[in-house]
Length: 136
Image (cartoon, rainbow, N blue to C red; front, side):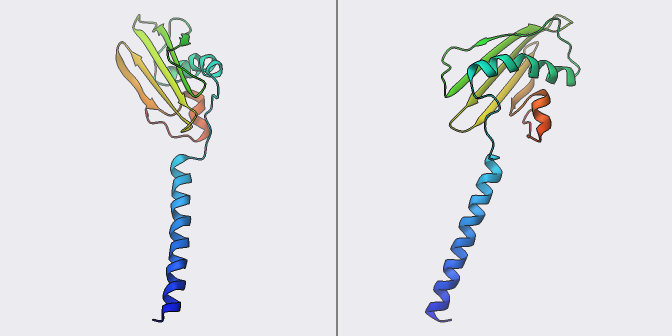
């Protein structure tokens, strides 16, 4: 094989490799933005989405969840915690977070101190948009 052909084949292979790596990155990152871009939006949505997730899992709440900001949240790192009780008096704790830099969200729900959802990327109806849910 001539040197010229080797250079052309090598360049073509490099281009294919770069395109494949870019496609893999987009597929893995999902190319999505955070569903809730602000602390207030996450705080408002979390009791609704968490209640829907619990309902899908057969858990009934005694009253709506009450949510508050977690210490240390920033405009770039959203952090919310919700608390409530099931209809059979078990404590419920929900933790939601979002990172603007990585555009990743994470949700955990504990019922009676036991995880029902762990590090999920979405909750309730938010998952129906085709997002994968790590807790399911």
